Length: 121
Image 1 (cartoon, helix red, strand yellow):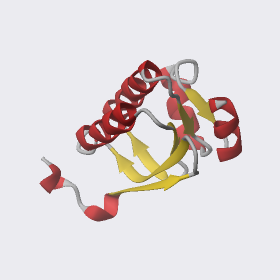
Image 2: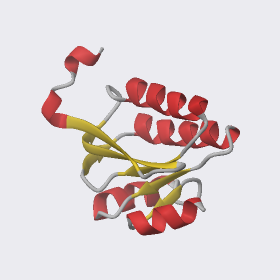
Image 3: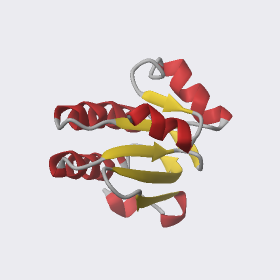
């Protein structure tokens, strides 16, 4: 299935913040084609059980419902392992996506990296 994803449409970058936190930056178009790989990565992070995760959507241009569902499942799995997930949705599109779906109340949706890191504490 991954053969259909042009590299220019999606990029993931991870940055360890030392200790028990990391940032996963997701760039471009986040759709059903990337959901399986993203879910697998969140599963690995939860199973490792040693970090909280901040998902930075500052450069996301499109987010479909399969990716939103992946975030909800990742949060549950991380919580089961005593860790947390926060999402940075600082642009008008990303912020509105979480507002319209009601996920602002389900996920820790934040406007900045500092806010996301403080909400994990």
